[in-house]
Image (cartoon, rainbow, N blue to C red; front, side, top):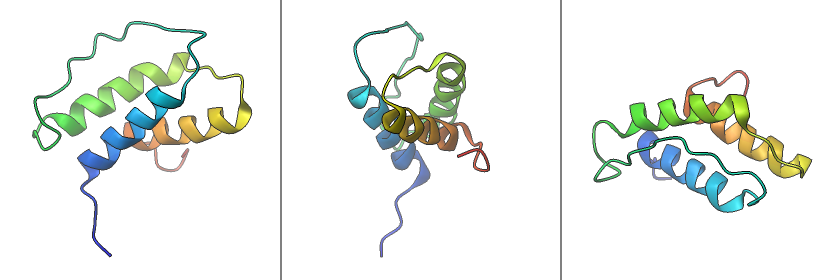
Length: 82
């Protein structure tokens, strides 16, 4: 089995969150994406974004909420909570 780099996994998790979330509530998070996924700054940028999204994240569908919450917690580095 191939191992997926953490930065790519973090990007995929946040993209899943963004694409799967409902359009009911939107907020600006001032995120400047790195030029490439393999950029050395990607993990820190994704962690910072996840930490800012976590306190305000809402979702009416409980299954989707828990899946996305877990993804955000993993990207934020809070593995025990995830």
